Amino acid sequence: MDLGLRGRRAIVTGATRGIGRAISDLLAAEGADIAFCARNNAAVKERVKELTSEGVRAFGAAVDVGDGPAYRAWLEAVARDLGGVDIFIANASAGAGTEGEAAWEANFRVDLMHSVRGCEALLPHLARSDGGAVVFVTTIAAIETFFSPTAYGALKAALITYGKQLGQAVAGHGIRINMVSPGPVLFPGGDWDRVRRERPEVFAEVEGQCALGRMATPEEVARAVVFLASPAAGAITGSNLVIDAGFTKRVQF
Image (cartoon, rainbow, N blue to C red; front, side):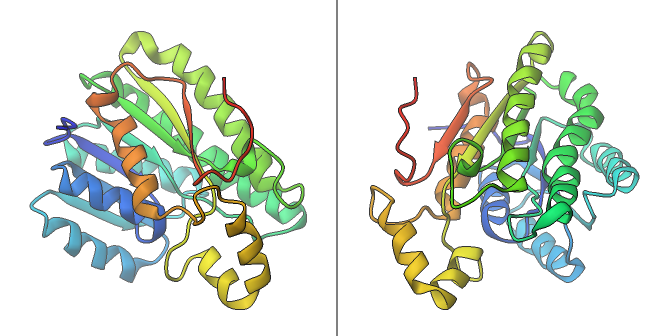
């Protein structure tokens, strides 16, 4: 299937490792130009080299998406560099590793508000596209209980609600808003790879709950994200796609 992404202009947050890296790889392979950010400047520079080797334009910067003014300034700058924006993928996350009020503050600033601020800054650019699309990367921790109560899951749930509401509000401008909720994702150096090494009994228990007998890969999540962002998914908006290798057991109507 031709996803219709050649020459499209995409912005991806958190794109140097894991799911974000796989998303940017696939966008480049499909011929899209990419602007991305992450926290590690050396990793950003290396990613720019890798992505431009695919024959597309790539702009990378070390940006703290939790810093509202700096983040907004970067978004406006790369929108100019790209000559417009067709796709915004909000992938950066503070993760689930922090506890207490610090977790609520970090997940609010990074997981929720970086997505909200990104949309506020980019919606005028997306409205000028002939196929503006936004994808929020959330988590299954937002849609069912998972170990214990967390700020991460609660604020990702808020992001899903915001995405659905926003999708209704901007549809008249030709902009689609969708979400994906990955389950446990395994890749070298990732959180579940660490759990596999340090707490193998927990890893085995969680993997055993995946109906497919294994965890998802970043590439599998990326394929769903890129499809939803592409013109091939032109009639899909306001949806939350669960990508969890069968971990969740709820019935989706």
